[in-house]
Length: 386
Ligand SMILES: [Fe+2]
Ligand SMILES: [Fe+2]
Image (cartoon, rainbow, N blue to C red; front, side, top):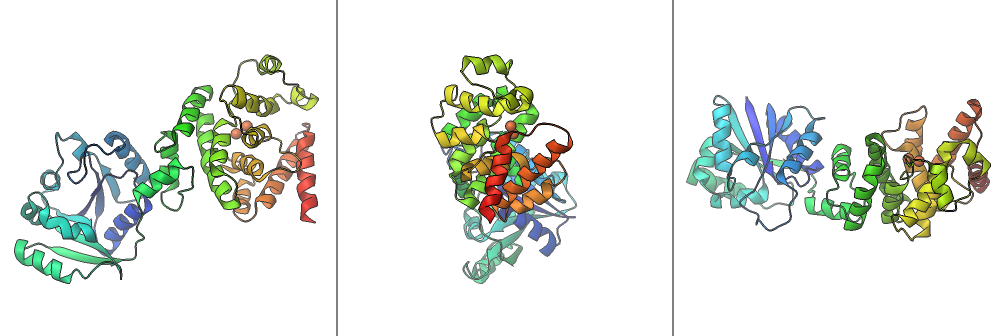
């Protein structure tokens, strides 16, 4: 068996890593690739703020579940002190005595290899597969020749067109409530938000506070709505930070005990539709809780929460984004949701119209009353189309 080893901090694992592993499997005929999550790699200082190793491993394992022949290993996490590649390779050689180990590196790493701890042993334990970027990286011919003569190294150069992805860029974007769906898989994006990694302090504290107010299922829905709303807000020119906050809080009143008496406490007047259809109360009450208990002052955010269930006449882009994200986030399952998701990538208004249409149709069929705000929202947008 030919086994590839790709090491790194994976903070977080991204599409660039996965592409390298997939390319190594197909181009170099490997049987599997082990993603080696580093505990304390020698080339980084201890004081940079890194996500704890057990969480990085969990995140990597989680990300790789959907890919065949690529697996995460935590062996470096269980080793005391600094983790050296040579120790990892010795360990793997014990587990796989009859197999070939292939250590996967990038071009820059190849240049640095001669300085690595016990490099001669590394070369004797594993073949090196070096990924170099076509037309960007320098000519490695001479370097390879020298490594071969100095260390009898076995080196395979693989020219690739894999796009360089930076983990730092991903962390910064998540911190700034920006979409990263082109850089990491949706599984990883959900893991990051669920575990509150890389988030700004503001978002993190709101999320920490709202989490115990929700059921596990509602928390997942909330996170998923947030990720979807960031993407939509970015696409349609709404403020992604506001979308993030509104999503995190949109269902905060879903499980309050005695919502009617809380409405009374806050002086909220419920209309006859809300009194009849209790499900509607959480939007209005949620907007007041967001203001009073989460100290959100921004009216745009408050209104996006306030109208996330019914919609309303002349909605702002942010209101449409939250309304739609809530309806189409990936965990939602109902007839027509796939079409809405597709439509949401083409036109925000068309998608909101289609969603309102679906709701009105569904309520009509089940004999429930429809809130006039939904009718007004629908008629207003239809009127805009003409
Ligand atoms: Fe809701
Ligand atoms: Fe919701």
